[in-house]
Image 1 (tube, helix red, strand yellow):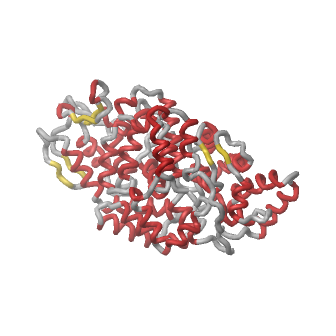
Image 2 (cartoon, rainbow, N blue to C red):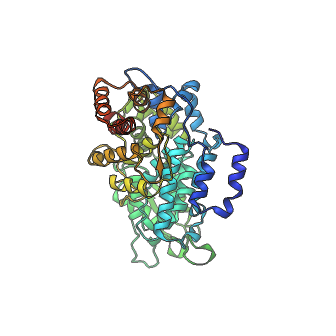
Image 3 (tube, helix red, strand yellow):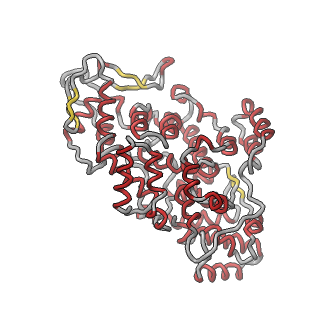
Length: 496
């Protein structure tokens, strides 16, 4: 449902007074993108519908009616639409997220916030945007880069400085140029704290630079562990990055600052490239290092491989990785261009159900699939914590794992969440399964809802299992809830 001008004006008028009131924002966003369509036609056929598959990859799964809309314009047009998120109306989602005041705070002002409150507001907003945003590819890429440039909010000021990092680094550059994204991350106060960049200095001849950020810059952020760098390169990069810190007092608190008195001003060499001595402009060493590593062929291959893994398969086709790496190098790290190469490829279209959903994607896709109305409050965050993927809480710099194996132990918790969600037992979240059944044209056997959630006709085994659940249920409502819970727990819904 599209927001009318009257609804937006009415909601915005009270925002200044009621910004922190969950009740107000639930009222303001009521009917603005949360409801179900009057009717929609689920996919049909024995094989996963190609549009449903595309939405399962480029978005966090289809909402009721999404498959029909995208089919009407075509997947290539949808890709172009999603690659230009600034042109998409996202008022309904913005209204839901606007309740969280901390999202708009500077790093300096965030120091006044309690750590638990800052994390909870950022985590809730992250879930809400993933569920409700019309800019789905942007949200998928925000999750990707959040893992790539992982920052654990349990460490010192990271608990509050991750909020501006999410806004000004990850979200601002998620579909931009990779060199710009890396530079913004390198100077992010949260990253300077997390990987000890603010402690990297040389004030005395005997001082040794702190290598933590330099190592992760090469191993995780750019070239990759097999990218061809040496321990000597790590040390030289660390020397180049000496002198950067974060102001913690006064009107500049929370801002990155370069101190030439803490910088190693001698000559360096990174990956065979000489960097001359920097007597007066040592801060330029940062830009020279980033230019060297972001333009390196290993970086193109590493990033292309990670993106192909996220969007295609755990073992991505080498030919597709090579084409994506070529696009990366040719365009100077244009993220949109690389995504276009991957998302419109034959390999992507063919790899249906090739990946296991991580807990965050599973929870969000279930909420989207049922057309749920959620506040992404404590019960949803607790479910993600039990499954092992609470936002911004992974302790090591490599981010939450992307492969399937680490997540296989979460299946029981997924099944519990599926049943609770379908039964209306997730606090702060409402589902109307009878309205979903009517809109899908379900005849009481859950076949239409199954086609909507799975993107195809249910198999003989799935149909038989649904029939058994419905037959044993004491009433229609209970049977529908248990049947939908079963569908969310099926192997087919767990994969994308």
